[in-house]
Length: 589
Image (cartoon, rainbow, N blue to C red; front, side):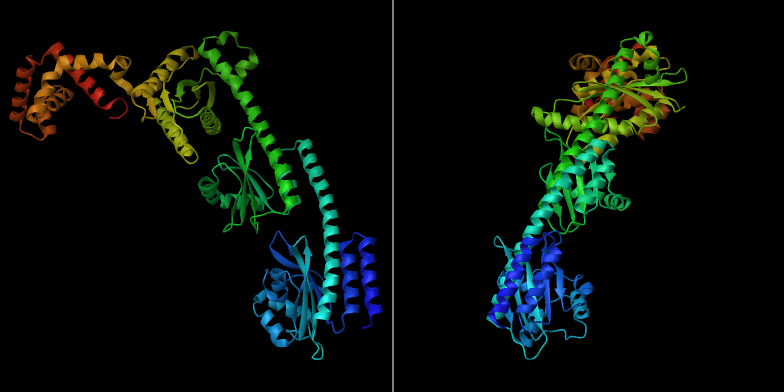
């Protein structure tokens, strides 16, 4: 080929670069001019690297079936094109043996597609040259020419010409990419701003984000419940992957940066408040690579900020409503029901057909720095209200610093024991859910059931007594109900030292005797009293002969110097209860 023709093709290629931003038109012209310049070229293929998938995708080609070619997705290093991409250097495959060696690692699906693309031509070209498309020392694609003629063997001269056109193709691709990125950036800002302004909620924002990044997404709240998804398919994936996401996120992210789970092809990004408190997680599905496209990251970052505002906004509305309900509960506790307006009575929802119960929740000193305590307290607060909403009863909650007062309105006919058990299970379940994400202590006291709202203070006082007791005396106990206290409610507020003194003065000698002699006189006395002073029943329950019981009781009389009658028996039984209370505490029997 004469130099004038080569020069003319190069001039035409340069002119087309400045004449249009239509990338397909530019590349088509470049390929045409390349064919004009390089004799013996039967097929010319242009592969561009797709960062999203990490594959080389066929962008254009001549001399092959383009429909099949464009289905080929090469890994870096796969085939002659993939090897050139990795090396970032032009390569010549002069003979069939070299092209066979260069193509031996092409995967089955790509191999089949390439065979269909070349049609009647042989699978292995006789000679091939490949030139990388370089931009800022980064390879963005490969331009490949194949010859199937036995008489054609490409040389360095051919490669040099191809590299010239490859350089022009790089410029065209970068110009088009810059223009496309600029337009896409404008689109991202405009569409997410519109979605935010429309105030149609999380669903519209997730849908907009999916359209922008071409991936399915789900938004979870901090408790890993799906609160929005881009489609029913995304919701199904989010539900199926929930446990995996919980495990990976808790173990590896711990409220810091984003995480890519390669096995599941999921990208997880925390949704945070301005105070860096995590209030949700954005999950992006079917992500091929850990690093996302710059504009995808822009869209995700903008959407994340909108997600945070939406979630905070929803929580603020609920919080304001709960605070108002809490204010009304405070008024009820202060016996100010008569001053309630009609709407206030409607919000509270009182009824003569209801029964009521008060609960007090206390948060003990956690020995944490303020910021850490505040973060965990907010997490507990949101979880508490979230779980309360699931209860079958109307519930009012008032929060005061490290304490919550709760009023439950019972509309069904469950017994007091059943209701107490229900709330014991509820708070144990709440504790289990907390353990999934944070370590945080709280104690719960439950008052007795009452029929009229004017009796609220009594149940509240009882709930407070129980939670105060746990906080002071039994920190490993979670829930204590006043109903379960029985006789212990008489002395729950007594000083332990005063109780010890009473026990010592009443049954102290018997306790000491058992310790010294290894006997069971005190336990025998306790069983005797529980059996209403029936020696036969006591002997049977202790698995001993009746005479043994008589002998033991005689020893008790002599050691204590009493007759086991009347008032003495009451004082002994009380002392035994108190001794048991000192040893085990309440709620541990």
